Image 1 (cartoon, rainbow, N blue to C red):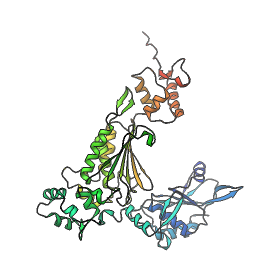
Image 2: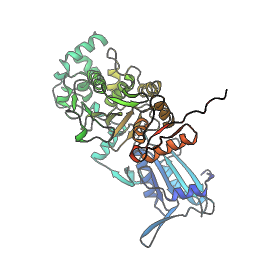
Image 3: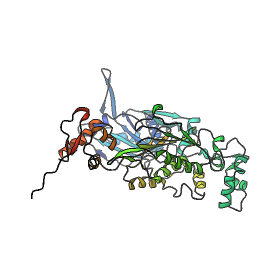
Image 4: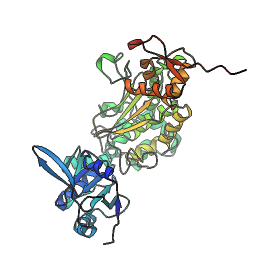
Amino acid sequence: MDFIAANEITGAERDRLLTLEEDTFNDLKAIEVSTKKLSAAVSAFANTAGGDLYIGIAETEFMGAKMRHWHGFKDQEAANGHIQSLEALFPLGSEYSYGFLRAPGSEGVVLHVQVQRTAQIAKAHGNKAYVRRGAQNLEVKGKALEALRLAKGIDSYEKQTVNVSASVVINSPILRDFVKQVVPNLEPKVFLQKQNLIKGNKPTVAALLLFAEEPQAALPKRSAIKLYRYATSGAPSRETLVGVPKSIEGPVVSMIRQADVETVQMIEGINKLGPRGLEPVKYPIETLHEILTNAVLHRDYSIASDVHVRVFDNRIEVESPGMLPGQVTVKNILDEQFARNGMLVRMVNKFPDPPNKDVGEGLNTAFKAMQKLRLKAPVIDETENAVRVDIKHEPMASPEQSVMDYLENHTEIKNGIARELTGITSENSMKDVFLRLAKSNLIERVPDKKGAAAAWQKKPRPPVAA
């Protein structure tokens, strides 16, 4: 095989690697590990969220404590067997890369395998597939393998039939109006048949979501939007829940539109501390709309859970059931496109004034809208069974600038107020911001105010000489 040069790392980088926590994204193995176990690790990373595998980190136990040390291959050629075995299953390319690490004063080279999430199911030795859960590689088979195919978007739940009569969609006024505008020469039933939206006398999941007047009757607990209001900037709790959560139902197009309106109404009246005091919270309508639309159209409908929208004092959380599909990851989501529910996305786009006008550009539009209002970009996070987008009402300005803007309109500022203003949660971290500003001669402590009453004020500028 081709020679792979070793990348030199520093002693500090080596020490960080030796203390690296094994988790969803990182795995460390000794060179004696079997190629079967290595292939299971690579398969698990590829089928979950990607990750890094380091081979050449040994672990010993001393007085009950586990200790790691660098014990790599003698040279690159000594790792040929491992690489050839892995490459037979996971060929070198955009999804898998192989390299070596060398550290000063350390024995041998460590083989570093970088794995990206794959669009297809990656299988290890024995034609077995694995997923990564924490620091474990778990084999998936049977129904779990079917669920993985749905999660990756290889199969789509939208194509499955539902055990209700096709008349639920054939006789729907929503379908009748849609066909008149899109394909006026076709009868509704013929249109559904041509689009494979009914099979025999059963509608598909996509047909119900698109055209049934009440899709939730046939698809309970997996086709609605739940809207909550929490009177807190912290974690949600029953004590901070305001009123009864709203359940927004109906076919997807009208449901998205109603969710837009209901969410905006829920936000109205929320005030947040700003430079001039309490100010009405404002979010770009485009951001809310695009993120809600994505949550509904790209969710995994095989999971019995609704889309959840939680409105807090300082943010909105939109949670969509299912992992990101295909090769899409949190890091590349603005650049990659993969439609888990291709039929749903395509048909929704044919409605008059569709919610997904610019197919594939929705999240980019959401991010740009936040930037225009000088708010921080949404934060996208993937859990084991859902994708959550946090739309935070936090200014792009630095904490220092936020403090100075506040002092333009107020005589003093306390630590608690500054934390609320900047989004910083640690009292000590906020204190560090004050100290940096004081060091720059921009602010000073308010005299005679100490303890809980401690505050800071703008430092008077020296008089200009005549």
